[in-house]
Image (cartoon, rainbow, N blue to C red; front, side, top):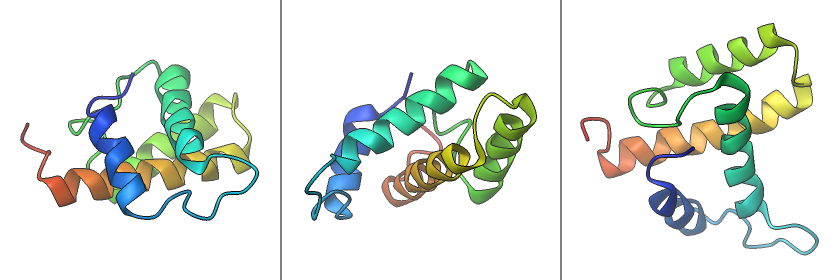
Length: 96
């Protein structure tokens, strides 16, 4: 589950994610990546869990330690998590 999902969709669109897609929809991929993190770690993606670069690092390490996700997938998850962190910062959602 992803808190502020609609805001995340708007934010990644505003940032240009997927603007040049021809084959796949990058926006859907980013949402899928965050859902993957949520599923694999059994957490809700929210500003209280994911609001800075250290959180991205920690969650990526937990995914790597679980050995259920390939390094390439963790890298993709990391890109989506960083975009979430940027959104939290940009919209001031940390304290909400």
